[in-house]
Each structure stands twice: as structure tokens, then as C-alpha cells.
Image (cartoon, rainbow, N blue to C red; front, side, top):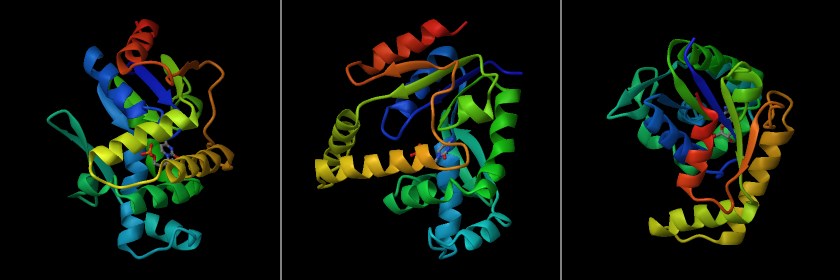
Amino acid sequence: MGYNIAIDGPAGAGKSTIAKQVAQRKGYIYVDTGAMYRGLAVHFLKNHIQPEDQAGIIRACKDASVTIGYADGQQQVYLNGENITGMLREEAVGDMASKSSPIPEVREKLLALQRTLAKEKDVVMDGRDIGTNILPEADVKVYLTASVETRAKRRYDELTAKGVSCSMEQIAADIKKRDHRDMTRDTAPLRQAEDAVLIDSSAMTIEEVTEEILKLCR
Ligand code: DC
């Protein structure tokens, strides 16, 4: 069994930034499980399936194979052998991932891959149900959150830095909608595991959060 650090939390809380830092500092592998759901979402979109078409999504799962690899230390996602990492951050992909991830067949498809990685390697794995469902025996569990305002501001800054014009109100509304969907779904909803340490990053720097998590590790 590898040493496993599980980081769960809502969209925009800084999970991937922090998880990458912790992984780098410990020399562990960073596993972004959201990217796996996004990888399956690319498959559904390529097959022109609507997010509401549950039966179509379940059917399409049968001929999708998502695997991950690493290039220059960065996680790459392969869909049926094709590297689709560059497509994962598109808005439509995020939306499809959020709408298809509550479907048990979709989750089942990725569960073994996630557990196998954690068994074989020392990992920092981030997602929504890592501490509660995927790795209930993880050595360290963190529930990382931040206020809606903070998360909206971070996303707004990120987009405007890229030259994308956007509205803070719209971003905040989208974040609230995604939180609601992730937290109220029947299968593996986002919630803090009983033995997870809560960290609210609203008023903390990346370095402070990273240090806080490193203190919890062996
Ligand atoms: O973290 P992210 O935005 O890349 O995740 C995309 C979607 O995938 C998100 O709306 C919820 C879902 N997801 C999930 O259900 N379980 C995970 N372990 C990770 C992500």
C-alpha cells in the first residue's frame, strides 16, 4: 500500500494547486481525479450525447477507456489511447463532467483505476469522494474549502489574466450551482469525511495551506 493523502473539497477551493505542491514537496505522485471525469466527459461529447441523456451516457461508458500517464511530472489523460489533456479545461467538458459524474456507472468506471494507483504508489489524490469513498483508509484526509466569494474571485482573476471577459456574479452563481449538484447527488456526494481535517483557505496563502497539510503527514 502506498502512502495516501486524500484532498476533497468544492470546485475552486484550490485543491489541485495545493495537491501539486504537497506532491512535489513529498516526492509523491499527484492524481487529479476530476480530470478522469472530464476525460469520460470528452468521450460523451465526442459521441454527441446530451448531459441529460443518462441512458446514452451509460451505454457510452462501455466503449470508453480512460488511463493516465505523466509527462514532465504533469498528469496526462488518455481516452482510448489518445492524449486529450488539452481539452479537459473547456467549459462544456466541465459541465458534462459535473452532470455525468453522479451516474453510478460513470463512477464505477473510474473507481478501480483510482484505487489501483493509490495501492501501488505514494499519492496525493484530489477529488470529491476520495476520503469518504475511494480511499477510506487514507493516511491523511483533508477537506479543503473556501468561501464562494473567494473562489469566484480566484476564478475571475484566472480568466481575466487569460484575457477572457467574464462576470464575477455569473461565476459565483455557477460555483453555487456546481456545489449544490456535487453535494446533493445520491452517489458519493461531496462531504467532509469524519476523520478529515477541515482547512478553509479563504484567508490563507498557497504556502500556508501546503505547510498545514505537510504537518499532518509522516
Ligand atoms: O475537480 P474538477 O472540476 O476537475 O471536477 C470535474 C467534475 O467531476 C466535478 O463537477 C465533480 C466531478 N468529480 C467527482 O464527482 N468526483 C471526483 N472525485 C472528482 C470530480
